[in-house]
Amino acid sequence: MSLQIFSFCTGCGNCISACPEKALNLETEFSHGWGSKKAVLDEERCKDCGTCSPACPHEAIG
Image 1 (tube, rainbow, N blue to C red):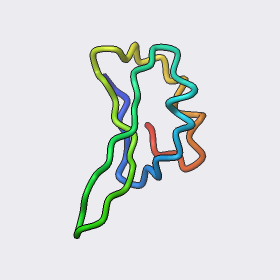
Image 2: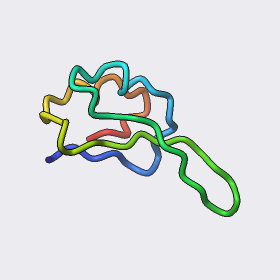
Image 3: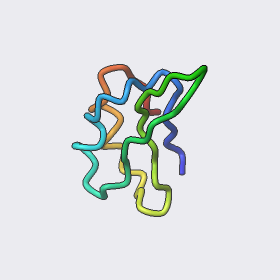
C-alpha cells in the first residue's frame, strides 16, 4: 500500500465516507491522558484507489 495517514489527521471522517471499500475507520488514540480520534487504514480492504485522499480537508492522507 502506498497510502498512509499522517499524524495531523483530525478525525473528521470525510475519508471514511468517501472510501468505496470501507477500508477506513476512526479509532481513539491516547496521548498524555487525552484521547483523540484518528483515521486508521485497513490495508487488507484498501484497493489503493486514492478516493479518500482528496476528501481530506487537511491533506492528511497521502
